[in-house]
Image (cartoon, rainbow, N blue to C red; front, side):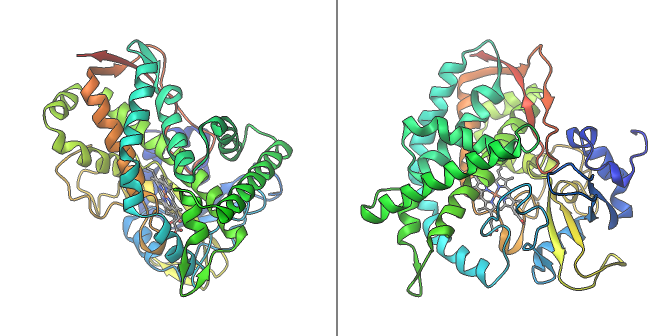
Length: 399
Ligand code: HEM
């Protein structure tokens, strides 16, 4: 067992790179109040940001189901670490209206239609990666989701570079200064504004056209909502999927027997993806605000306090998953909260699952062996929100 971890250490780089020992030690004490962000870690946050940590499955599930008490709006980091985001940082009734509209645009049919194209991108990236030791994060797990979102939104291939730059500007919370970030965001807002205007004038076969056209009860999306949604897709859809792909490949590189089993039995591919979402959840935590005094597992959380929902800890709670620290393919995985639960359940879940399935299938077809490289694998430690690799060297052997 690792040395004792204090609640205030939950946002340290060490815990971000491997949060699971901390969850094991602290779960029974939760909910507890802790320092979520030290003062000065985000421009404009001059005092430490305190929050209540929910680590138990039952508490997390209950909070996700009760959006009236656990509000997604009024996040204290809006305007400081990120711009106001539609949908994910909103409550009903606005959330309901918006979600109904985008559900109409973000259909399974649209995702299924993308499958052959995603497959060809996966093939292309793997052709370029070769078979020696490769950093799979740079070569595959970053470019694939970025290209997919660009295509979905209808961004032309030659503008892919700026798209990637904007995406990075959002994600590099710590490594990019605010002025540069805001400039990049402004550039992106202008770009999407022009795209939306062009689609209004003449439609195309893409998501922006579907958003411009979407209507519920005669109501359409407003301009700022369309732009906000494009930006949300960039943030919500890229790094999350990158980390899922990396976590799957890393786990399989350390389980050669499972790799061989999968090569001969592809019916297990989907289970491997779901178990990875539970076992190494790409999204570890997100915030809510209490709209009233509320008791959680016998602890009173006052109205107005910040609450942090730990999806990653809930997915390893022994009260819900037997032997939670074992990666197993014989579990009932229907209730994992890797994509959340309730009204904010991940809109992109079918797309993320499709990207993971296509990727894993392509890797299995091509490589008889996949194993850790000689250079070290490095977990990202920039943000506690996601869990994944910054660098993942793998040796890929064709068979
Ligand atoms: C493995 C990849 C992904 C994971 C683990 C993931 C995880 C999540 C989680 C946990 C939530 C719930 C947020 C909350 O309760 O506050 C969420 C919401 C959301 N996700 Fe994902 N996501 C992934 C991929 C994607 C992709 C590919 C897209 C879009 C292209 C996407 C778009 C969204 C959106 C728009 C929401 C907000 C939904 C709402 O508030 O109604 N996600 N995601």
